[in-house]
Length: 159
Image 1 (cartoon, helix red, strand yellow):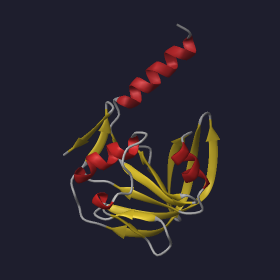
Image 2 (image 1 turned 180 degrees about the vertical axis):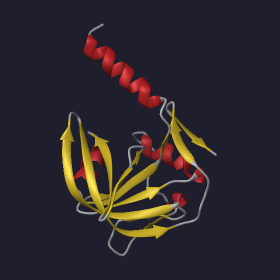
Image 3 (image 1 turned 60 degrees about the vertical axis):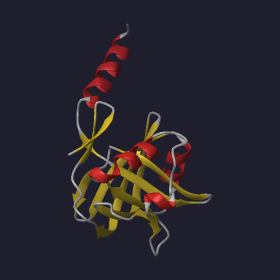
């Protein structure tokens, strides 16, 4: 086993054991809404309010990385199934049962999300097969407090 493979394997194992919050990033794409589950959302700055997340090469990720605006839907305990749906190819997305609505500016937003953060990208930084997006938060739509949803050891855990 090469040293690089050892580092990559250990890196993946280290982050599998590091619990993170869960969000669905959503955009109004050219062919309809697009979205994916993200566990990489992080606060970057308060002045201006900004966050970051990373996406890998997938059809939804490419639409999100190129969008002029997006919504970061912070999920709570009631959204574990939805997080799973948006994390896997072919999962149901933007169905009426999932309770999506359109913001006045066009982005899909999740009714009942702990918060919806409407954002405008500032920077897109390619890193390997991923793109790190840094975005300014231009609107915060608070939602109900709904318990915790975290991603840990490749599972969505509520609490």
